Image 1 (tube, rainbow, N blue to C red):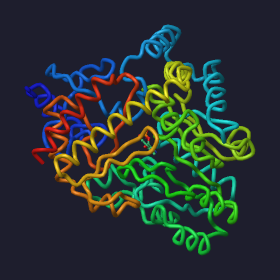
Image 2 (image 1 turned 90 degrees about the vertical axis):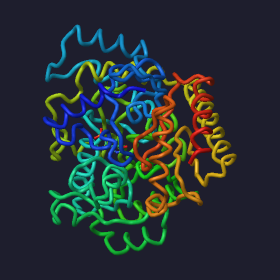
Image 3 (image 1 turned 45 degrees about the vertical axis):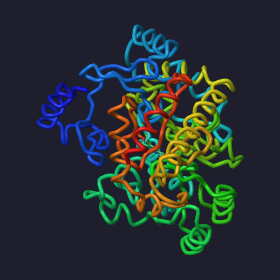
Image 4 (image 1 turned 45 degrees about the horizontal axis):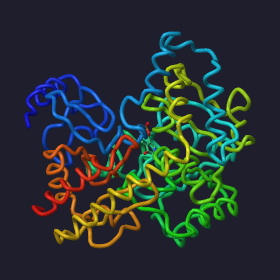
Length: 426
Ligand SMILES: *Cc1c(COP(=O)(O)O)cnc(C)c1O
């Protein structure tokens, strides 16, 4: 397979863009090799600048539940842009999207639209602090909530891939109010809540952590966090940027029956456009300006094209979609497990609802350290073996597999057959 065009573009990119990319993981640093520059997406496939085709198991890191260029989403975006790209004034589409989110996500009574998951997470913690008058945040090691200062502490995939603990440029002050706790560790949560309870503004988590590979919540752990938040008066924030509309239409909170106070949404909600949201209980959300004093704003927030695309995608979400995603995930996970077992390769194919992760480790991960200790060099070899066979996986062992309904059974079987070949040579 030729990669000359991607190589040439990457060389050009590196002279004008730091590291040649606009988001670090795209540079293939942890797996090596030439990042593929993408020319187009077609259904379940990506086409790179050299004309190579790949079955896409990243789907833009989650947004594309239906794969690329789903017709309803494309038409909604094209129609919207014909009426104008941005107004900086309210539109009916924003109301319809807010209504669709409130309808789908159990805990959300009111919601505000923003442009990225980072912005949504950052705004959610400001709201939690403003609403409680408290300052500290309890955050889990390895959970990612975007790259804002207070949340970029032990933040999983992106920073872990680069081997840096947080980031230069984040002051001690900005990180000082973030209390770190290991995931799935009740004693540690209880101890942190006991130590900081009176000043704890929020308990924040990815309810289905998917930025440190996939490390599902232990039985009852989310309900335990709800209890701890209630006992301390902290706001419970679920970052459902990945899990929202993916593990179920109503996200992890629907799947697990645990209701947070604030929910952070991104990825799927924007249908592949820059759109994210945070929402929750009306009395909490009404602390936001102009209803209340907590300031938050955005020139392009609720952008009409992004809103139209996001709404079009949300309107397609019915039981049949999740049944199909579940089937695809089952077929892929079962196939991969069999492929690794037959090759005698020690691998964990972790699965939670419609999310899955491949980790080269001997035991199933329960916290960040388990993922960090896995064989990431082996993942890099697996990644390249798959890429050579036309299967596009996330270029880091800290990430997960994102399926779409565009994948046919034959597509999944092709991915599994490739994995069996690659596993035999690992
Ligand atoms: C992707 C992600 C974010 C950040 O969203 P961006 O749109 O990349 O800023 C936040 N939280 C989680 C759980 C994510 O996976």
